[in-house]
Length: 435
Ligand SMILES: Cc1cc2nc3c(=O)[nH]c(=O)nc-3n(C[C@H](O)[C@H](O)[C@H](O)COP(=O)(O)OP(=O)(O)OC[C@H]3O[C@@H](n4cnc5c(N)ncnc54)[C@H](O)[C@@H]3O)c2cc1C
Image (cartoon, rainbow, N blue to C red; front, side):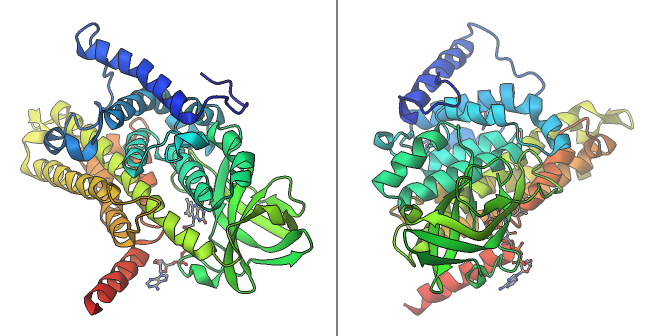
């Protein structure tokens, strides 16, 4: 295991495989009966409740590497992420020590090629990680997403070799927390209306403007930031050393409280010209490409929330008795469970199916928009059903359902609202129909 806080001599691929081998030995020993499977009172390994999952391993775990990755992340999530989730939610804080464990496990550069220090895996692997982490702590997973998808994956595809060498080792190890600044106080869905500017001045660009709702803003050391150069959207990497850059206080929120967010403030902020990512004016293309894996992994988070809520409601409905019988004997309760199961499986299948066709060289806007448009309301609805089935117990903090219910709403807003997905899908289908 690498020492936290120092860039690793090993690539994340080697770290990941060493970690998976370790976890793999533990898990296969349990499966072979060497020790009983310790499920505690929590969720089974992904798919254990799901007949569709059992019959569709090719979709959810297309290779042995994906299966090992899922087993490892599921075990890590159950053992290390779950126990701290309620406390992080109450505090409204990112558990930084646990976040850095993701670096130890080789997960922070999951989509980065091995020769550049990453795990060399694909969008399906990214979906697996978000799916498993979100069963226990979607807020913590959002910090992971902002770091590994919005910064690391995005940065990698628009950075030069020199820029990669400066920023990747320390972000992939977890020493530096990172994020991405696109949204502004006056420009969210209408992202092209952004007003942050960057003006060339000798060996620097001077940035002015404000980004808001930026996940990891409080802890982050570096950010991928979009600003307009002569009216054209351009990407930069900005870090805490840049004069004129600051962040606001933490912006408090309803859910996803295991991660923080803040404004990024640029006041005549001097960013070295060496931090321009790609060509001037190429930022929009980078943004659109990365929004696909962002939306896909946000969809996977909704699937994780739905899976966990389904499991909790099924158990509760068997254990809770009313009118001298378990409540799962009542047709109205069966309707919640049956519909929740069908919706969850449909969202899971769509998300994993789209993941097969998302990658740096594959454009699939319509697929990622559709996955998030479908999965986000499923996460919210299944959390709501679980709360209804659990009655007062579901509404109280003793169980995780009320937290997952609050977390689920964000996925209809962040990374594109459901209305934005409807708009994009209509545009793409109309274009295709006109061909
Ligand atoms: C917890 C959280 C974390 C976030 N993290 C980040 C981050 O790390 N980086 C980042 O850059 N941003 C981040 N965001 C911002 C997020 O992506 C935006 O909130 C989102 O894109 C919506 O923008 P908005 O909030 O300005 O809403 P608006 O764009 O103001 O939308 C308000 C309403 O108007 C609707 N609307 C707008 N335009 C249309 C239209 N053309 N047709 C129909 N309806 C329309 C919307 O769908 C919505 O219902 C985060 C937000 C939250 C809440």
